[in-house]
Amino acid sequence: MMFKKSSAMEKFSEFLQKKALKIEKRFRFVISALVMGSLMLLSTFFLFDKALIFLAVFLVFGYLFTYFSILEGVEGIEWFTLFLMPIILTVSFYFFYFLFPVRWLTRLPFMFLFGISFYAVLLCSNIFNVGVEKSLQLYRAAFSINFFYQAVVFFLFNNALFSFKLNFIINALAVFIIAVLLAFQLIWSVKLDLVIDKKTIAYAFLIGLLLSELALIGSFVPLKSTILALFLASSYYSLSGLIYSHLDQRLFKETVREFVSVWLIVLGLTILSIRW
Image 1 (cartoon, rainbow, N blue to C red):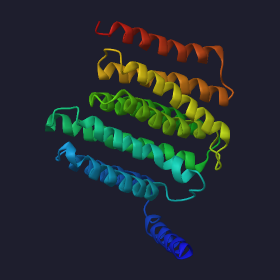
Image 2 (cartoon, rainbow, N blue to C red; image 1 turned 90 degrees about the vertical axis):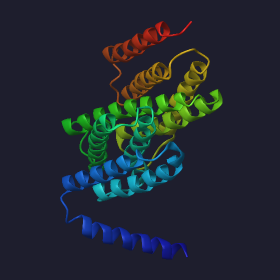
Image 3 (cartoon, rainbow, N blue to C red; image 1 turned 90 degrees about the horizontal axis):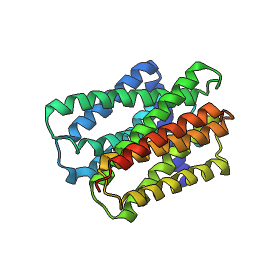
Image 4 (tube, helix red, strand yellow; image 1 turned 30 degrees about the vertical axis):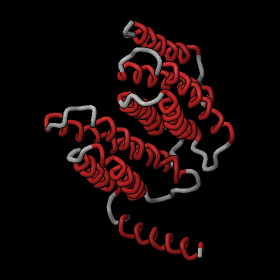
């Protein structure tokens, strides 16, 4: 039975590749961004009580259109790591939109920003999939853009999360899960191995644990959700930046100073923003 299912999936994959490969890859990226942007636009006309339905839609279509865009040469752990950012980006934008007043003045710029962002992370996933040499500028640009969008996604997700005023345990658990997923993908992108080693998992869990503890403490501090989300995003940026620099053997004094300085500045602004 399992063999038949596997064979059916392989046939479907081959059929999809034959049809999609006739379309130039950049056009596939544009098509995917337009389709996902249209779905995002459609979701804004429904109340948040339909969130579970649209989450399922975004998960399925996000995975399918990421595969449609990349298509060739996906192997091993890439079936997870290459698809993670497009899906998480979509979900975080969806949640974040409901913090805005529902009107066309905010809807159209938001859709445009989402479409550009989805296209950008597809490009990064494609470059990681191609496996260009790490010395090439193309890889460095993709890594930087991917890292930037990870920080953006983490901010959007946490801002929406804390606006719900949930239990502090739920806050900490949700932050832990999203941080582990993002850190796992980031650390993987340092070497682009098809097989994950224990070090990658350990570092991802370390980042998730530290950030969940910060979220737990932040849940008891009288801060606006936006400020707390910004502090956690800067903490993720600094901590994961130090770790990936260490793994990439680029942990110089200037690098440490840069990441620590960013975190200290945001920490200072966060303390000043506490509503005593």
